[in-house]
Image 1 (cartoon, rainbow, N blue to C red):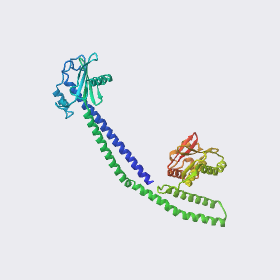
Image 2 (cartoon, rainbow, N blue to C red):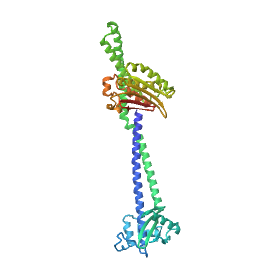
Image 3 (cartoon, rainbow, N blue to C red):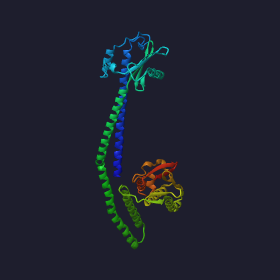
Image 4 (tube, helix red, strand yellow):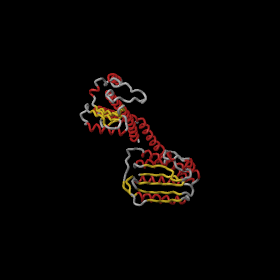
Length: 422
């Protein structure tokens, strides 16, 4: 159990760490992408501003009824941008690779300028500009070029600025961030694994004391219980059977059974105890056990229905699985409504599935998720049951040791079910 607790602690810590690192990386990624787009938009604005004063290239102001805005001097534009981007200056435009294509009011190509770019021909520039206009976006990316669409008095101009270097630098930066975060996460995970043993140590010590207490209690209680039952035999031989001696024997045997179940449950919780697995016919085992319960079910005025798929083989600890089926059948018999129906089903597919259902009118008032808690019993069980409330806990431990799952559920209206998946 402590081993599972430590693994769960490591797993939760690792998932939390990964989630935080992923959120940090995504935040950096989106911030870096936004910064790159903003930088390239500023460069395209600088380039387009430099060509405002060319004939027919004056931009239309936002208000069509007002007079055209005066172009911003390149020196002032560079200074304004320099407040946001320190690397912008009057020399930036001379080191920027760009080209532009102008269209007249009829949509025909009026001018193409590729003097500042060597990797794009005139035809390629026109094709790229045409695609940009068809997308109806004012800014964006076309391959490794950031574009900007500018409306002028003579038509439309599309400016492209080469952003390949900026994008490569951005990608390199993101790769570096990813490696740093991954390395940091690995270091933290190693520390979590290293210190996890110390973190669960108090629980381990408490659990060890609990197991020791159960073992000690078993030894301390077994001896007096054995003496009590032995003396009862002597008393019955001398005095004969009577009501009081029968009560003492019943309670003594119940106490003896409780101690045995507590010890058994404690041993099942030990992860170190291996299962004695063998391959056996689980269908035949189930038929044997249900046939043993059939007489008791009929005597109680109830009905037992079995749907067991034949010749299902399983590799597990047969003795433990016999106990599992006995617990589920005994539980169904104890808490089945008068004249009720008990169903036992065994099917196979991806997994072997054992289902035991019984009529139980109080199913809606039962806390199904707590039925496997030790010593928990519903109100109906407290008044009509004779168990201790740990049988289902033992059943749960058996299934868990076999790598499966056991759950309680509402099978139908007024019907409770227990499903064990092996």
